Image (cartoon, rainbow, N blue to C red):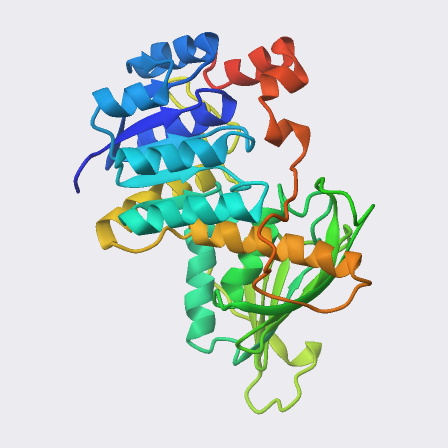
Length: 371
């Protein structure tokens, strides 16, 4: 496989984790970095042995970058992603949520689509290969026809920030069909533009229904209900149950677990541990996210957590809030008003060092490498 040259933009705590994931991938090499924070940049360059720049545009002009990886606060993410696209890289992988407003998400996706650039948005659960194994099984009728998808823990406190993960999985198991309409409600003031919990219902154009449960419950996770079985993942472990032969209207006693299909280890196995070189393992999800960009370039496909998905999940969250604003009535998609927005929590919108303080941040970024 070809070695793709990676330039990281934003050398903080999460930027370091992304860079380590690319450093561990045999098809990618971290060759440069850019950050306006000289302290973060200096530490990153020392750790990765890469040249650093205070301006990402200068980095892209002077280095041959295939994959630009802007890991930035959401407030500046749209402009940098569009800037990278205009500089002619082959792929861009940013973090979640993709943007605050639909209009910003539109221009990011369109800037990349116009130039044939692969855009990924978010270090997402849907990038795990095990979820795609499950989806292929479901596409092959392992549980019959899919009827509905239950997201059992809903948006919790973030419909846009952490909610990106949940909506992305829902879309995945609705086979990424277009959403036709939603009904939703938020946990606080529906007229607020700030992130908050959300719950509701999504009707997809292919007839699949989704129920988003807002609050924690005894069975958190995602559940895909079919006419002949069930797929379930609690966020760490997966299982498929199939109805016994001849069961017309299966009950719990008719369902049999299919053994030996999915790993018995957690999706998060190894997280927080250190390797022989003293690096904290970035996690299987971060590894999968980096691989999704490589696969997209190698196979000329969209990344599993594409920018288009990032735009769609933001729209779903906003549409649910719009439903609450209008009296909890059905809201059809796509939304016409592209100025609608959700401001993520402060720690996502702004630089975490400024939000949580230098002492907190020094400890967080320092933990990437064992003392």
